[in-house]
Length: 376
Image (cartoon, rainbow, N blue to C red; front, side, top):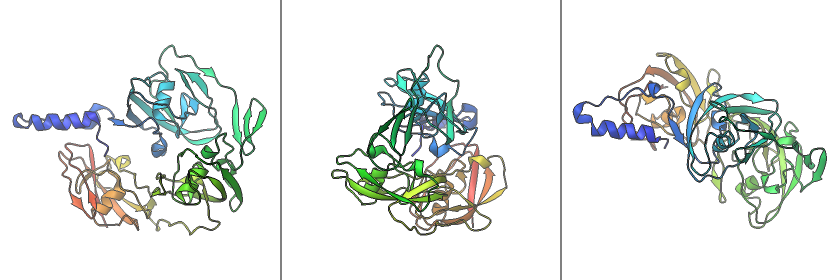
């Protein structure tokens, strides 16, 4: 559940001062809350919220994971790693960082700064920046041009042949199929060596084409981590959403619309589509984008095989609750089948009471700036 330390402290304070009439300020006046995250968390879940400012709290003693770009980072970069690269926090102490979601860029320049090396990258569909920019006095040293391609790695014009398979990463277990995007219907064989290290995967077959091929193959039951082996990869078009799941010791993640996919099957069942008049959303989507449009209604559709996200209230719900999960709680749709429903926007309330219904348990919350209810 997403409960920040500031939010939890406010609730405890209100409870302890109830006898003398505690009054909590609306959260909007307190600035964006800092959501606790791990050092491998990235901004891909927020990629559609261009212009939004978000605050995150990175734990101490972190290990930065991959970061692409300088000052403007790809949305799949480590948020905490980018903050350390900008000098806003240190790995040993952690801390709070604010980011702003921005549009994708044609290219990203990697540099060495703050003891963190970021990487070069080409075009990517989403980005974020560190609010306030790099800490004063930080010096960024450009890294050599390193390009990953289907033949291996090219460093400053020198081509180095590595492994087989798509993505061309030096570590075959980190290789993906992104460089074959658009070659729908084609296939290739990728060799996964034994004793691999799992990497990120989105979806459950098909997978986003930036997922680790070998890790996805373990998830799909085609190989085992300890033994590895060859897998045949089939390229497919992008989809409007990807549902993660745990399988064969690998937990894949959910993701929204993405422009390319791969699978280990030549033919896939057709993607479920939103009905006419309904907008397809992900299971993590909230109604904060509609705040203030009180009385308006929005017809939305949730894909099947959803994964629940946090919800506060029992109808009305806080507008930062998952709309799809709230619809399950309200009995309008089911997690397995998804479906369409209508969201009606309401003003914020002074109190929200959680409950358990239809397999979903929602939480209590105090005053909040916006609400919604689920209608048929």
